[in-house]
Image (cartoon, rainbow, N blue to C red; front, side):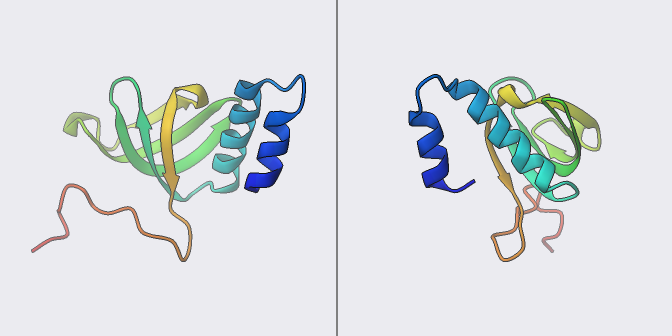
Length: 106
């Protein structure tokens, strides 16, 4: 959805901004299954980088590569769309999500 369309939706009478946000975020994740994503949450574990596996209702299923807690790396998370504060989905031609653990560095 482009910025103008979203703006019109938000300015329309009777629109629930939370419903519009949830629909937009859900659609972004659905359209980019199997891509890498960086997700920042307000609650623990705060940061997840991994592959979008699925979207089920208002949950996104992420197979974590890296979290801010080493013991949770490699786990699968079901994240409620409303708990996502910030996200970035890696797309062709756009910046790559870096390896924050630095394991590729020699």
